[in-house]
Image 1 (cartoon, helix red, strand yellow):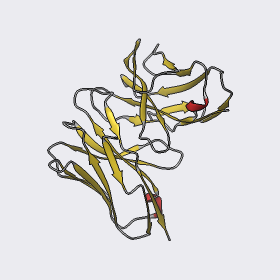
Image 2: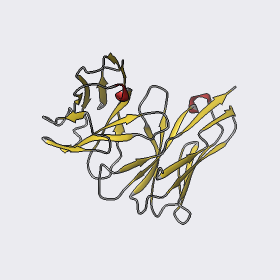
Image 3: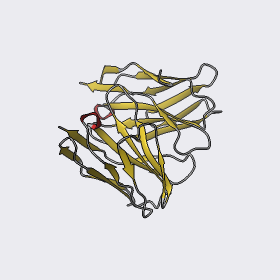
Length: 113
Length: 112
């Protein structure tokens, strides 16, 4: 069983609408949790980073939240744009080791007119 | 601007052939990583390096090798390509410790 589970697997929304993507993890403790955006045919790019003690972090229209008690994180996208169409990957960085990243399988978001 | 590049971007090869995928970064990062990405799986670590002449196996290292002769490059070699190695391969680098990993654009490899 993957230690980082994401839902939904895919999502279609209309341009301008908001959406929330979920990440449940069992990895603990961790150094930080990041959300990455991966455009089709490109490598992942970091959107947000949160340490264990942080609850929320924003990057423009993207807001990530973290609940360490329930081991859940979410990525909220406000006023979606066509350019938000991509896969969003939740990644947990384990402490002390640069090689120990645990990746979720991602949520594929499609924003339509 | 500093960057990380991969070549080729697309490769088709036959079963049993040796294939080398290139990764080059200009950030002067100590750490470099190779991942593969397949449908239904998160990115999985193949090999990684913490510096020149240092290489380590990841969770899916069988059939792959790497070498680190300088800071900028970490080529990934498939010794004898198999159809199960058809995948998209990503190289990444980070400065040190648990700093953010920066990913290359990927190489799509098809083994026929």
